[in-house]
Image (cartoon, rainbow, N blue to C red; front, side, top):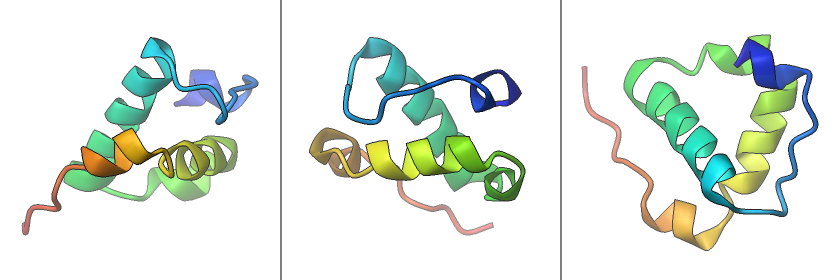
Length: 66
């Protein structure tokens, strides 16, 4: 995430790369911890925006109780 924090990512364009990045972040967010959100505010804003895409919302993984 540190690599992408300084990059300009478009939340308006859903392609293979953005889908892969969003899926990886969703996995971290769902399975492990949401702690990354405070450390990477630009990634958080991008992820929150792109997560509104219908196809990403439809395939969002379920939270698993720990």
